Image (cartoon, rainbow, N blue to C red; front, side, top):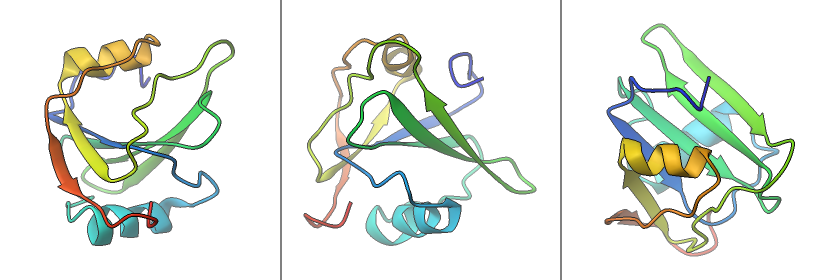
Length: 118
């Protein structure tokens, strides 16, 4: 499902390491309070990766509720940006590269986050 997601207008990556023990409500608060973004924006997906680069979480608002997905790779690792003070808005091409295991070159930071809060 995450590999073929083509309906997203914005793909946001929380760079650095996020504690993947966090649940849906905690990640929603992180998006709103630390990244200053609307977690209920239609067409947006928010991606998080922990210290183990073989898994990630994604949050998507579908109009009537929020979906929390987890993806764990059977082989390989995600090439996740590790600057912990950034949130990136990446293109669909970069999203596909990330899902295929390639490192992405990002265009710009959305907002800097205070260090130590991600």
